[in-house]
Length: 334
Length: 292
Image 1 (tube, each protein chain N blue to C red):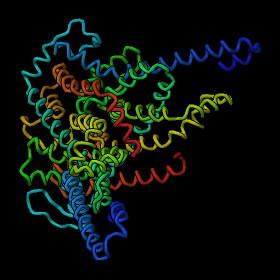
Image 2: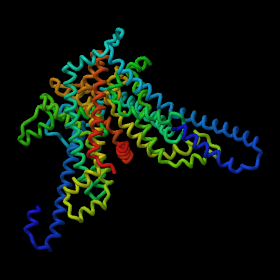
Image 3: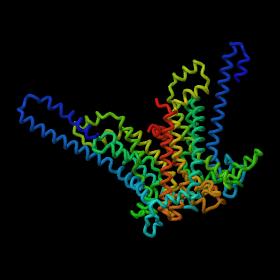
Image 4: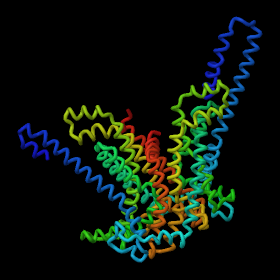
C-alpha cells in the first residue's frame, strides 16, 4: 500500500521536469538523465523511509517491549507452573484445566461481571439523565459549573477516594449511617455485610466515574441537529417521544462507546475493593484482578496467575465483540 | 399537569399555563441537578472539612461541613509524621517524566504515521493500535519480570519506562496530524528543509492543542495510578502518593483519619489546579476518545 502510494507520488514529482524538457535533448541523454532522476528519487524515498522509522522507533519500542511481548509472554507463561524461584515446569493446558474447576476463579469472574453490569448501567443511565437536564439549561456558566462538579471526583485517584469512602461508609462512625439514623432509617452494615460491601463498591465506582459519561453525553446531545428537534416540536412531539425517537437513536454510538469503555474498565476493578474491602466480606467483592494480584504477587503462582489473566483478557474481547455485533441492530450511525 | 390543562377549555389561558409548566419543569430539573451535584461533591467536601478537625474529634458526628475553627496542624503532621514530601516528589518525578516521554514519543510517531510515507506504515500502526485494548493485568506479570531483569525493581524508573509511549497517545496525535494540510511541508521541502525540520518547525507547533490534551490525560492517569506502584515498589522511599496514602491509612489506623485526609487533599490539589487551568483539554480528550 505505502509502496504503491510512494510510486504514485514519485511519478507525480518526476512528470513536471521531464515534460518540460521532452523533445529537446537526444534520446540517449534523456535515458541517462531519467535514470539519474530515478536514482535521486529512490534516494529521496529511502531517506523518507528512514525518517519514518526513526520517528516511530521510540513509541514502537516501548509498545513492543512492554505490551506486545508481555502479552505473548503471558500466553506462554500460562502453560507453565512457576513460583519465580525454581525453574519453570511446562504443564501444558493444566492451568486452564485447573481454573475451570477452581471456585475462586469462577466466583471472582461472576462477582466482577455482576459489579461491572450494575456499575455501567448506572453510569450510563445517570450520566445520560443528568446530561439531558443540563442540556436544557441555556446559560453556559451554569452548564460549566455542573460539569466541573460532576468531573471533580474523576480528578482524584480511585485509591485515595476509596480511603475517604471507607470512612464515609464506616458502619459505626460513618457519615452515611449517621444521616440514615437521623432520618429514622435503618443503618446499613456497608462494609461488613456482603450486600452492603457490594453496594458500597458500586456506589463509589459510579460516583467517581459519573463525570465521564456525563461529559460524553453532553457533547453527544450538543451535536443533535437543532432543526430536527424543532420540527418534531412543531409537530407536537412530547419531550419523552423526542428523547426515545430522536435523541436516543442519534446518540446511540455514544451510548455504545460509554458502555463498552465502562465495561472494559470495570471488569478490571481493583483499587476500590483492595482499599475498602480486601475482597470481603467472604469473597463477595473479590474481583478477578484482585485474584490475579494475590495469585501472582502474594502466592507467587506466576503461571496460574497468567492463565487467569489470559482468561480475563478473553472475556474482555468477547464482551467487546458481542457488544459490537449487537449494536449493529440498534446503533444508528449517520 | 396535563389533566389540569385538559379541563381548561379557554384557549387564551393555555399559553401562560404552558409557560408556567415549562418554568416548573426547569425549576425541577435545576433542583435535581443541584442535588446530584451536591451529592457528588459532598464526600470531597467532607474530606476537606474533616482534614481541618483535630484527630480526636475527626470521627465525631454530625460532621462539621463548614469548619468553624479550622485546625491546620494535620497538614503539618502529614509532613512531619509521614514522608509525604517524599511521596509528593516521587509522584511529581514519575508523572512528569511520563508526561514528557509520552509527548515526545507520541508526537513523533503520530506525525510519522499520518504524514510520512514509509514501508510498513499501516502494519506498524495496526500493531500499536491493537495494544490499546490490552488490559494492564494481562501484561503486568511479564512486565514485572522484564523490570526485574533490567534491575529496576523497586525504583521509580520501573513506573516510568513502560509508560513513556503508548497506543492512545500515538492514535490521538495521528488523528490530529491527519487533518493538517500536506502542502505546507511539501513547500518547505522544496525550499530545502529536511524532513525533521518540517516536523519540528512546521507541524509540531501546530499540534499544541492535542499535545495539551494528551498531557492532561496522561498526567491524570499516572498521578492517580495505584496498581503498578503497588506491584513494582517496595521501599517507602519510592512510594508515589496514592500508594503512600493507602499505606499510611493502614499504618495509622482509624485514630487519626484527619491526618490521612489532609494527605488525600494535598494529593488532589495539583489535579484540581491543572483541571482549572486546562478544563477544555480534559473535555476535548474525553470526547476525542469517543470518536475512535
